[in-house]
Image 1 (cartoon, rainbow, N blue to C red):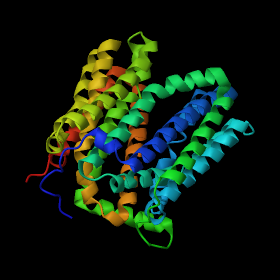
Image 2: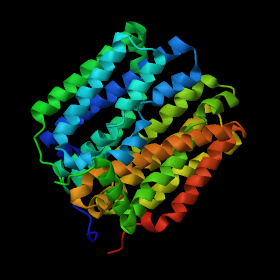
Image 3: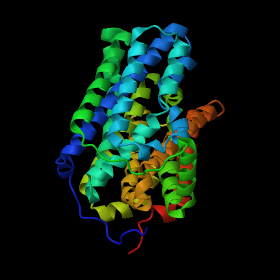
Image 4: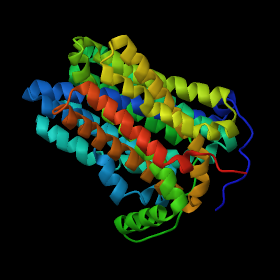
Length: 402
């Protein structure tokens, strides 16, 4: 399929939220984000209290994200085989059951981790179904702004989630806090079931889902236009995330360990500002032309960490880097057009799976390098690697010529 020569007419966030079905989907998504943040924080506290192991506590926090790699390579076919509302409601009910079991306090810490990991595998399918539903609710530039709104919601959860979750755990204890996750899951399931319009499945394919998932993933990756856009979405930010893996030791390196929270918050605030500003103030055609320059912002500010800046300067550099994530708004329309409609759910799921997997790997890699080199040098190296990736992908990031 060819890419249209002209970008769609400019839209505004008010037009996005004027679509009732989008408001329903967005509300369900915010409930999902809030519930997951609280659950993983409470689980981490519970596991650490039960084992005293920092490693197991860290695994508890990421246990809900690691299964993306498995779900994305084994089950993504269901994102197109099943109706999207059924997928989203069904997964909310699964999440509610898991949170209830955790809140009951009947499992050992290791058993809790195993339960969260196994039941998190279908999360890739639910996320793919949600992402593929968005362009069915919003057209033209409203779709791109809808993507930005979802991204801002995720960034806002990072900014507020730790603080709110910490207050809830202090007031209710980790097990009591988990019941809030149960309530959020049930509320989201009820909202989506009663207010989200039923839409048909995108494909009537049958057979083994694993085999179908592998087949479609291979077909998607064989197409140069899709493969290049996936790499452009995956590599530059994943390399930047490698820097986040050493922000805690970096804060200790500069003698202010308590500033780690400020550094992480700066990244999230930069992402929020980028999505809001680029989505609201920049016209669609120019947004696509700015994809390359914005992508350079991901890595360029991180080079300053080789000089070991103080916490305020470091936070400003990280905020500028986070702002650069808005480059993906310039790729959103092109990716939507490039993927086959019948496999839209799986294509979006593949994009998300690659993002989650590579970011996790590079964050772990950054932490491993931090064992051998000063954290400031590791952050700078991550920035340099991101710049190299942007340079290699420049022809993809550049807007298509008319």
